[in-house]
Image (tube, rainbow, N blue to C red; front, side, top):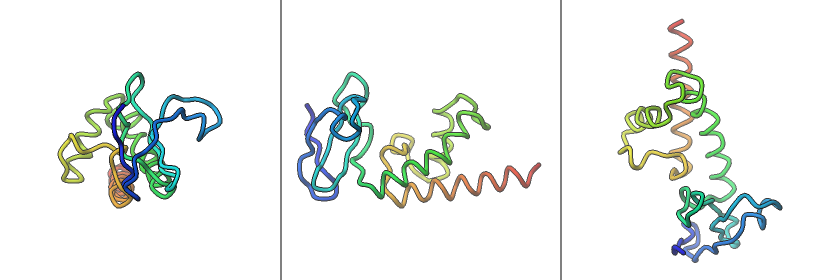
Length: 127
């Protein structure tokens, strides 16, 4: 098992079944009870899906996904998630390897929302 520390308090996160959080098991998570921060893991591994997120960051990640995911699911990158993230990395000025909503902090998630709002405006104006 990996050693994962909470970015808010520095304590070591516990590796537990997600049933503790959700009431139903969706797999394992790393949890910091002190900060109510957690992150799931890649299926079949103990590798975190990103960084531990507290309630505020979880809200912003959900919003960032709500704005970003349609562009690769149904929009101009239809079905090409990696291409959409490559485009987002250029928009944010980040390396591709660091461009994933799961790794973002609150300001970066806010930036995703702003970029996607701008993209929607430009798309609607060009019609």
